[in-house]
Image (cartoon, rainbow, N blue to C red; front, side, top):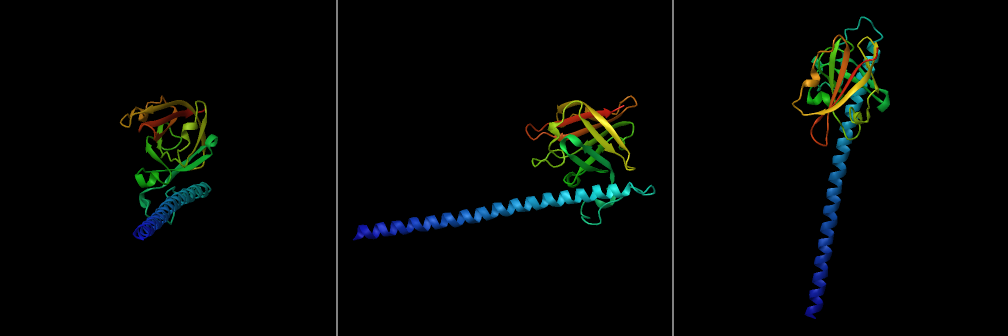
Length: 211
């Protein structure tokens, strides 16, 4: 009789443990799904804001007397008053088009590419553009697919387009600033900079105007 009671109690304990494990699993699954949805929501929100800026740029180029200092009336929590769009970058090969923001910060890099150093779009010198390398292919997430002789289009604030040809690809240490050099012998160049998530280095692509 005692043996039967012991077996019965043992089975109850096992069932209780299984129930606890089940509910813990459900709870953890709920947390993971909630976290994933939160990240997805943030991603969609950033992309939406980036698209708003792109659309604003396209509208602004229709008006010659526009002063170029525009931001979305929404999302005013993004360094707004001192940030504006100075042009567009378009890379047909990887289906990329983003506004180029005038300033750079962690928050702005979550929205689009940023002017990091050098002249304004399509002016003589080396315009350096920084962008995040996202695993979901946003912003510069597919930059690794670019090859020598591929083309990059840059539009200035007036809507004028200039095509650039890639002539160099490299990986540099985070403290290597040689890619910012402004000695271009009168040529218009661009430098795209993003992080390499594999070894913490910087992926650098350089291109010069297609004459």
